Image 1 (cartoon, rainbow, N blue to C red):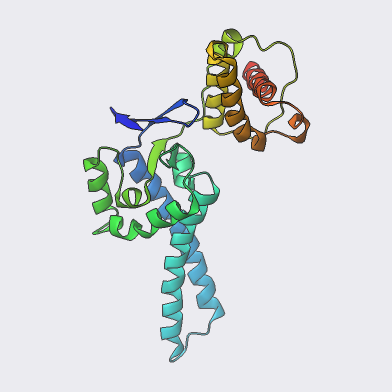
Image 2: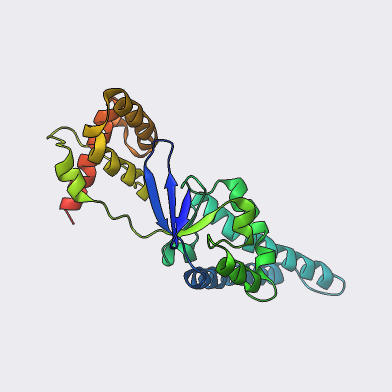
Length: 250
């Protein structure tokens, strides 16, 4: 993994280089602001429900206030932790500004990493709205806040994947075989398909087979059952035809 001129380059185990532009403090700040506005609405709604549900009289005021504070912290943390974990490293704010949290191998952050980076968010937030976090992002060579440093994560720009249709069309003749119907496929998986069909003709048979096996393992979770009978190389070609056909319809 290398970082140069604000770009993160990750070499996967199958020797495919994935390139990401690191997100700066500006876009991350706007995304965080949108997330906190949404979280505030959720918290305000929950507190209103508590106030209406619990008759606040006499000594019950203390219990109601404590419950509201605990609920506020729990909802804010749950908003960030659950969305980043279940939504491939994105919250609503990050998705709106084209950002995503990834790990050192380019995959979405697992639950443990997401939990750590969000627990440390309290320190990043000090003294007011990410004062420490913004300073650390600016000073860090990899644009990481304290939570990212603790969890080993990075926030990168994640725009809608742009496929190199030239590679899919001309470098490797895919023929007129079966296309693989796929679910929504992340950009990393699409890049692996593109890179494979672009360079498979230059690979030795053994290396080609091994590389195809690694890529196909990742692809099968995004393909439907009718592709289960395809071998690894045929599956990659079928996915490539599907991506190419999708591009023709745009």
